[in-house]
Length: 104
Image (cartoon, rainbow, N blue to C red; front, side, top):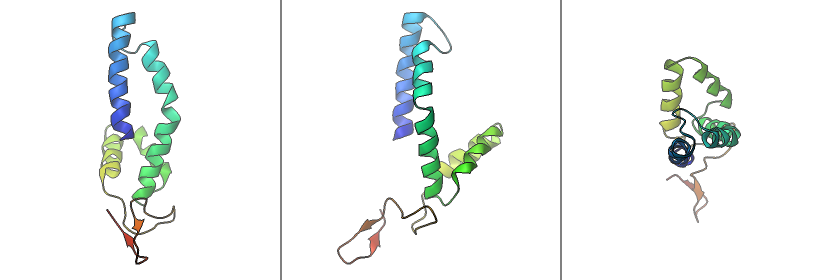
């Protein structure tokens, strides 16, 4: 959901930048927003990689053009592991009344 809303906000800001400033690439509003969500984006991606059982350092694979982007997109789009891993419990697991986790 974070990525969805971030993309939607970026599109709206790009349109506003174009209408106000006439810049066709990246205006000041888009730049400010990009800087504001840089750290949260890194944190959200690290959390998503942790859910799949990978270290957050795997984000550095993005430095490999095209191949790295595809690999990380696939990893972030796959379902997380149902069992707990070294980074903690499955965030989608809810304790039921019987005490066993139920994965959604």
